[in-house]
Image (tube, rainbow, N blue to C red; front, side, top):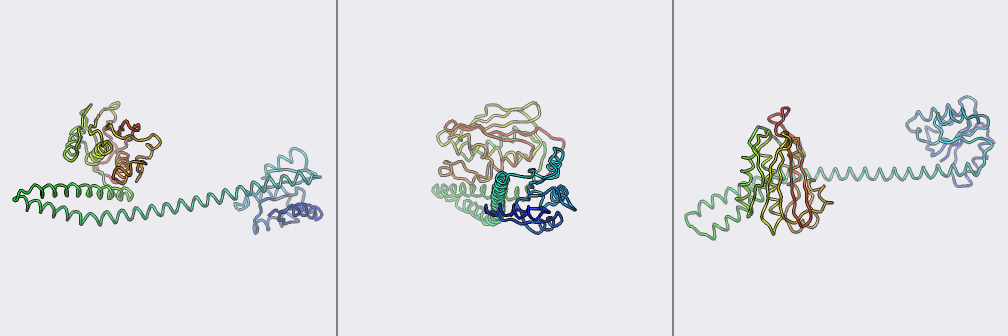
Amino acid sequence: MILIVDDTPENLFSLKKILELHGFSVDTALSGEEALKKILKNSYFLIILDVQMPGMDGFEVAETISGYSKTKDIPIIFLSAVNTDKKFITKGYASGGLDYVTKPFDPDILLLKVKTFYRLYQQNQELTKIQSALLTEIESRKEAENKKDEFISIASHELKTPLTSIIGYVQLLQRSLKKYEDKAVDNYLGRTNLQLGKLENLIGDLLDISKIENGKIEFNKIEFDFNAMLQSAIDTVQQTQDCIIIQKKTVEAQVFGDEMRIEQVIINYLTNAIKYSPDCKEVHVETSINGNKEIQFKVRDFGIGIPKEMQSQLFEKFYRVEGSATRFQGLGIGLYICSEIIKRHDGTCGVVSSPGKGSEFWFRIPLNSSNMSSSEKI
């Protein structure tokens, strides 16, 4: 609706008729005071405001309108037969007007201006609807994400207790059957333990995600020998994986951080490198020092590689590279956990890869940090 404000009834009547003939809904006010009362009660997309009025003139009305949060964005067209000098026109714009038309005015020109403001109003309304819909969608996604995180937390905790019992019973069974020296039974139990180990690691990752999301994952930071920790990680992987791990470059360095969590990152990098290289079990490992300030670790494989457009999302929670999800098992949480661990060490991580040529995953963390506490949570 359009509000016309003019102290001359004849002017109101003629302009109202012109606008109504072209389909616009029109309201009128004979004074600035009446206009302000109507503006606070009704919604208008445009105000056509006469400058010369007794009591409050058009400039004062416009300044008042611009001071209300509800009305400050309503466009105003000033109409004036007297104040046609540049200084008055300038004052009109300064007081909140978006256009200034002098009387006598051309009805066709004024109508074009009104139609332009109406189109802008419609576009603004459409944008508001889109923004509102997007906000609703964002809130829905947040709610769904929270429910998913809650489910993961509950499920992983509930699964851990029976799994621990199963692992214990299988170990007891192995000891009980050891005296019979049955190779077939030993083989089956060995495979069972292997699968239970995978399940235990998966539940451990889910628990880590739950702790990260709730700020409860603990970091026990101490100074440790990086190379000794690396050798331990390599030995752990080689005992459970059919692979060849070649150390291309090593360094001796003391690092301040959570040794167990950094080892967790390295083991994840190594197992991923082997997993996504079905035709080549050789993996290269390299460690270096950057500027005596940080240690850099790289794992290079010769597997399937990753398209460039997907690399930026690799460290996001639950992300799986399109095409590999059906070939390789996993939930897409390992690299997310790795990135969170590295971030909490004030470090960075990333990947360099080409499809069919393999990938190189890396991370960098400070050698030491005087402002790090020995125990902290995220």
